[in-house]
Amino acid sequence: MPDDVILFDVRDGLAHVTLNRPARLNAVDPEAIARWQELAHEIAGRDDIGAVLFDAAGRAFCAGGDVVAMSRLAESGAGGASPAEVVRGLADRIHDGHRALRESTKPIVAAVQGPVAGGGLGFMLVADLVIASERATFASRYSDIGLTPDCGVSTLLPEAVGVRRALELTLTSRTLSATEALDWGLVAEVVAPEALEARAREIADGWLAGATHAFGQAKRLVHAGGARSFQASLDDEAATIGAAIETADARTAIARFAAGSASR
Image (tube, rainbow, N blue to C red; front, side):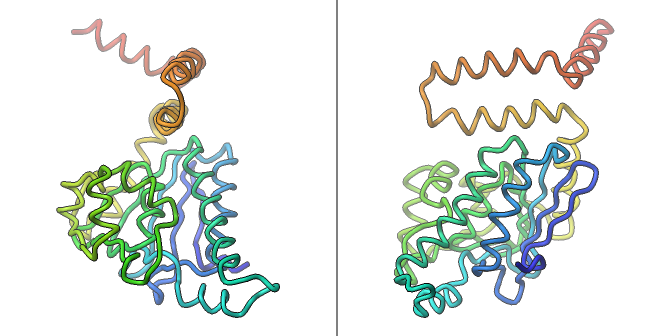
């Protein structure tokens, strides 16, 4: 499996993941999909990773699935599978990677430098915070090619912007500017292109320098809350904060807070 379609590096607790098919606007082909699934599970399972910085090479962040590569594979009847079976299998692998990252305790910041389209929205929204360059744009484009949302877009997009706006984006050819995406709640911040990398790294470094365990558990609790009863969430919160107060991070932070309060 080619490693260079998605670059991966871990240093000092930070996993850096870079989509690396710039000539195809970082659209994912079967090799990139397999690599994404593999890396997602590795990130979720590694104790030495405390945060993730997710970005992309070239002028675009992600154009979703490489429709040309996927349709060629589907029409080839690989392994005797029908086109529907081939495409569904590829989608299942992307979705498995997304689920692993979404359910992990690793907070993820995405640095979006340019256009995002189709399933690229789902890749982007796997991140917990999205920082966008002023040059970034956001569009669905599913209706333009006669396909339906994948890569988690039907869940992650309305979660971010609301059902009505999600429908507007998926049922039309509308393209949002970075400023509009900020107004809609699709991204957390918009910065100058030259400041994007530093700002995303600042956020990731802040997670690593702070109560890393608590950040990860907070992510897990928030994402899990919408899929279960309120009582189940309350029970999980109680158990999680009980465990958190015994961690070294919490003891240090509480002592610092107490010292600051006493000095006021």
